[in-house]
Structure formats: C-alpha cells, structure tokens
Length: 236
View (cartoon, one colour):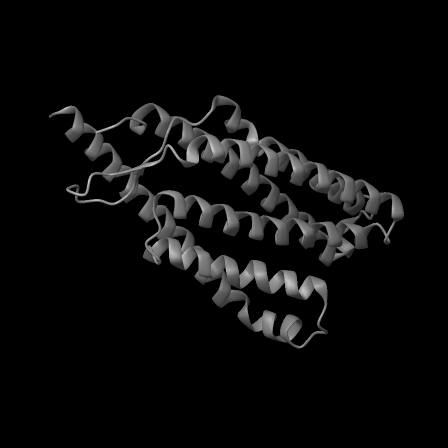
C-alpha cells in the first residue's frame, strides 16, 4: 500500500474510533439523564432560581447538546471551525462544573472567607494559565491546518505537530481539580463517622469519581495527541 493509502487507512480508523467513543459517551449521558430525570424535576426544576441552578442546567443540557452534535457530526465542523467550537464548548463546560464545585466546597466550609480567597485565587491562576497556553498553542497550529484532499472518502484535516509543551496544558486543570478534591475530602472526613450522614457519603463518592474521571480523561487526551502526532501529522 502507498504512503497515502497507509495514511488514509490510519485516519479512517481513527475517525471510526472517535465515532464509537462519541456514541458510547452519548449513550451513557442519556442513560444517566433517564435515571435522574425524576429527581431532577422534584429537586431542581421547582427550586429557587439561583446561580448553582443555572450552572447545573448549562452543564447538564449544553453538555448533552454538545455530545449529540459530536455523535451526529452536526454541524459538519472541520479544521479551524472545529478548533474554535471545541475550545468554546470545552471551556464553557469546564467553567460551569468547576464553579459549581467551588460553590459546594465554599458551602461545606461554612462560607469561610479564607476558603473563598484560596478558591478564587487558584481558579484565577488556573484560568489564566489555560487561556495563555491555549492561545499560544492554537495560534501556532491554527493557520497551518490543512484539509484532507477532496477526493478522499473521509472529511477532516491534517493538523501540524502539537508543540511538546502544549501536552502540559492539562496540568493547571489537574492541579486545580486536585485542590478541590483535597479540600472536599478533608472537610467531609472531618464529619466522620460518615455512615450517619448519607449526603456527605454521596458528596465524597461523587467527588472521588469525578476527580478520577478528570485525571483519566486528561491522561487519555495526552496519549491520544501523542499517537496522532506520530501517526498522522504528515501531508498526503
């Protein structure tokens, strides 16, 4: 098989795998939505209009919409448009989830001014680091993106090699999530025995699962980018 044929086969397999991952993620979201809809109606929809409620609806339904679009490939975004859309959607969801977690920890600590200062400072530092690193990294890659040949049976783009330092852009996010997890775990543990406080057990359980998922997702993304750089960042 020619070099072009090898590249096309690799890219087609990657596109197929991404489609399967998107479908699996959407199935999980839909399953969770069906299971929790009754509780959501009783506890969220009828509650007072607050910032946490707004953040919940954005993260819940915007995330579902984004995943539906990813799964159905609607709209057909490729190349630069895909990069812009992905950045906007990702940062919107991350902001809503992290701000919700900050409010939860702030409440757990009795609205402590010290905790508020720590969280707001760490969040500002994380946001600035991510924005600066993303802006510089995307600027280096943005205009070097090239679409696949029109004669190919798949649509997409050749992306330039990702700068090696850009693979560390997940570190500010992981660091802030670690801070949130540690603060949550310390406060929840201080109320032991937790068997008498089911709500705190659920907070600890959900917080731990979320933290592990974030770390796992970050590790997967870095590994996937490295694989993509080695195998597919070349011209046809």
